[in-house]
Image (cartoon, rainbow, N blue to C red; front, side, top):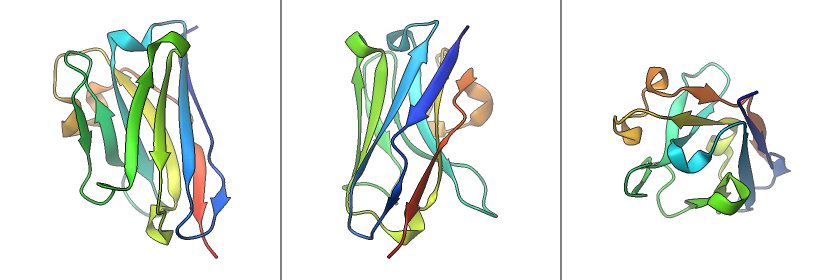
Length: 126
């Protein structure tokens, strides 16, 4: 069974840090571009960061540049999202997704992504 499972979401105070994990089973993540998305209540899903399949290039949304870091551990078939200096506006359900095609992962077009996890809740609040 092909699936992605996110973990690491939690309640954290502003300025705090979290590391999200995205583990793949049934397929190898290094054959895919991986994107992190988030969706806050009442808002559309938005792309946060991605790492490409072809050359490993990385992209970040402007709202998280300098605070979030995406990385890939092929040996563990896992992609991470390190989130520092968290803000209340980072509160959302975070999803990882895998894209097999040759499109740019940084377009963050949901239909380009083949597999999705169920999400992990991140809440930033004092």
